[in-house]
Image: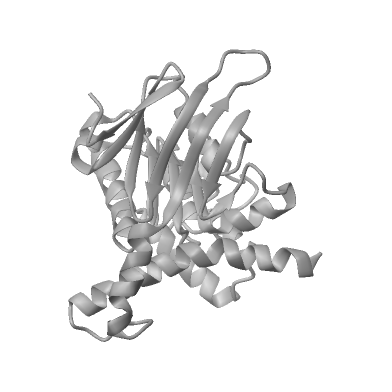
Length: 277
């Protein structure tokens, strides 16, 4: 089994990490500082990789449950590496469904979905966990484990990939600090407010440094200042090459951060620059 699965694990992670590495090298070359991962003369070639890579693509995608009407109908779009894209629409429009399709959490009824260079609609079930190493997911339902502490929840993705323990704990604490939960390592999620639980789920999603990060209403239970701080965390990740897809109905936040919005209504969507009206 290991001989079959390991190549899948490597190929799923490499594409996204190469793109992040390219952006770091490009920044180093532009700033005339020693590049961390390659020679400066490679920066232009590596940046071309960023500009050309398609990280998420939907081709004629439909989604329905049983004999009910299509929640998503004939959806077509592409999201390039390093884009910061919002998904908007009224409640029940299909925003969460779209994110679950991107994360490989549900299959489409029809159509082709490519994520990080792989057709996930054709991917064997046993291979999907390896793809998800490159995709950080935080859903409206946080799916936290209430029999474990906050930091143990954040450590889970790192344990799956076998990261050395001391490095994993350092990274987990940094993720908690990044979302404003420093000092709450030993708290059980049931001891936390709804907003804190949401931030804990975000820490778990970012701790593995994914190439793609998808988030469903990540600021829904947060006050304005905390919501702004979380959006800055997302933007920091985007600045080093992480592709972001965030579902939200908060137009004030989208007005500040959105460069592109996929607006869904009645199963169909409009792809617009900026915020959908």
